[in-house]
Image (cartoon, rainbow, N blue to C red; front, side, top):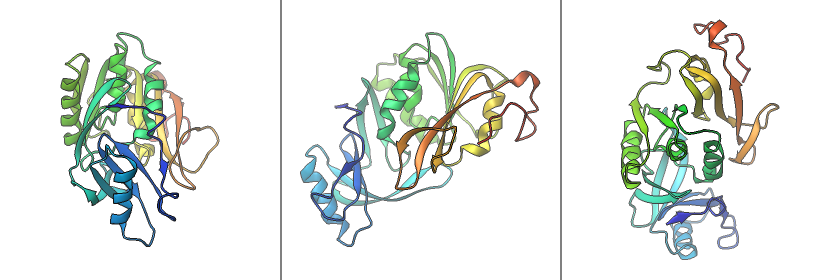
Amino acid sequence: MECNPLEVRTKRLNEVIPGASSFYVIGDIAIVSYKGKEDPRSVGEAIIRLVPRVRSVFLKRRVVGELRLGELIPIAGEGKTTTSFVEGRISFFVDVSKVYVNPSLAIERMKVSERVDRGDLVLDAFTGYGAFALHMAKRGAYVVAGDLNLDGLIMAIKSIRLNGNKFTVDLVHYDANFLPFRDAVFKLVIGDNPSMIDRFIGELCRVTRGTLLVYRLGPPQEGWERVNEYSKDLIIAKREIRCHQEDSDHSSPQFPHQIPI
């Protein structure tokens, strides 16, 4: 099933259930944020009526931990957490209980992939299930995709197979505080870890010879480009950092040439 990025943006439930919040759909799974007084199961059942392809609905309480996993509670349907979907003509397999999935960034991922050319060496530093990585690999880039979440890397392998093994992606299990790469090796590094990106800037810049593209969750801030709304007061924003490894002190978290965050 092709996922139209314009349709995966947060949908409103207010006309169906007054006071209800919003939800998004991943394959045949819907995830809803809801803090109303009604039984959440009635919200889940309303979503299934509203979107017939949805077979499982989960209530998201929060995103927690170093792996950015959502605390999900089944409220309607089958309760299964695995699904597949298509984004930009690329098939993905995910388990929403083991990896963070944000379909509202589909357009952003396709937009970023247009920056790479065939043969470019690129690092997707927090790849999760391989969302950015597969889009860039489709463009012909040679992509290294890493994560601390081993389950996410296994999903990325399954997604590559779903696409007929057409993409060149090397998957690496690591702690991004200590990247297993030489200095200044990647032309482009993607740092998609919005809630904790600050702590990794120095190490990401160490392995970058070109551009570091980072995403951050927070209030609107000068120098950051708005990418997506997250809540009433928070947005996901991005910023480009030009890293100059040849004369920087990487032992310091505030080395010269780092753009402040």
